[in-house]
Image (cartoon, rainbow, N blue to C red; front, top):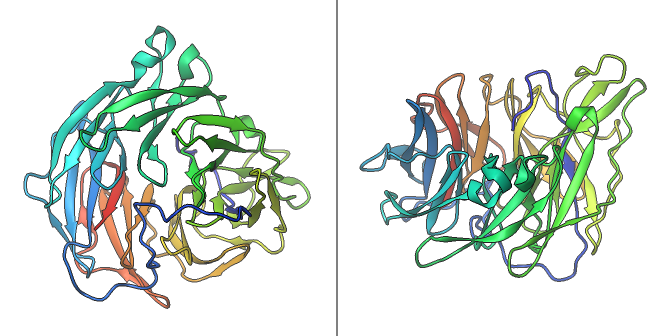
Length: 391
């Protein structure tokens, strides 16, 4: 759920000190997005964008070349009643806020509905429903932050196992949370601890969950302090992103304690997690970088963990991501259009959608430059969400 345009966000980074880390996420290659691969096999990725269509939705599919140029997949847009999107190596998942659909992905990127489940049926009195989707690092479990939870109050995280041969989803259970917990979790490299943050009723909160080997979630008591803001302000966290080792980025904003309004630019902090998932930080108001995106709407660490993209109501910006050390400046605003959602590709590309501008943008990113790729931006009416499958 996006915050109002008046919100500004600070980015928090977490380092996890576990000695044994899981293999890299199935959706992220080991090649950093700042190091484009040499031309070779095509496509480099399939890009899926949901868009409003009448009283429902449809999904546009694109084949992405190594250059970043997009070509519509044959049959696109597909009549998929899906707003929220997530993807693993074989299936695209989409939800309309009640049902969750599994779509098999053909070799050319085309979609075919393979299975569906009514997620609301698992809630008491059939209330609420999914308001986002995300997968774990192995792509074997699908989760949704469920509006109103299973007691028609607060929110919850539902978990579904994914049948790799059919795409069918099997309900594993849900974890009751609170009204504050309605954002996707991001799992660190061990695929055990997932984090996010929110500022429900202007109360800062960083929260974490532990994932079992079977995919079920358990809420943990995370010891995490939001950095102290300048006199007269407090920091308000929102969202998260994780790399393939032990770092997590969490947006927050400076807020005036007297007016409860945004009181400065979004910033970026760095945290460290111990083997129990607790978070510590050396970040301060003075050493955290500021962004130019105004209110943050999305953040994503690049597949190789060297860059972090921050989207917001005033545009899109990329920073150097330095693990446990403070992030450093890289680009200014790459666009001044409001950007709602972003996703990295594994060969030096960053994808962004803007509902207000009706655009899908593609940026080619190297270790020293970032600019829109050939053909970008692409017109698309009322884009809602984006998912990228690296090839």
